[in-house]
Image 1 (cartoon, rainbow, N blue to C red):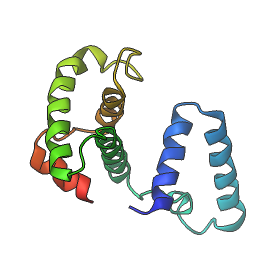
Image 2: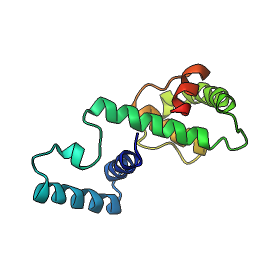
Image 3: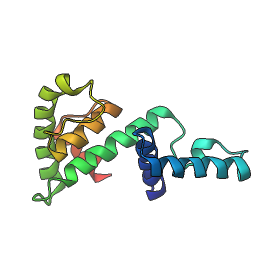
Length: 137
């Protein structure tokens, strides 16, 4: 995933969350597309993936990566993947009570907040092996 795609995805996520600055960014990008690049697909002009499934997968992986980044005392990807797998295991116990919430509750840790967002975009892998593969990308 390119930095342009990451930035576009985060703008879209903020836009969907109601962030006024992101709304203006999206509005400007859409008008630029409309004025200059109408022959291309809108999602391409915005720097987004071309399918909703791919977008959800990229967002899920992005938030899993941010959750792993919060595990700052760990330097090796395998360690982070193993600890993140444990965090996901604990998070899954809380998910039934949280799944109806747009955002994680105030009492949630930063890692839980990222896991909440990741889970909203798709099934979160729980094995250290799969997380290790995702974190290395």
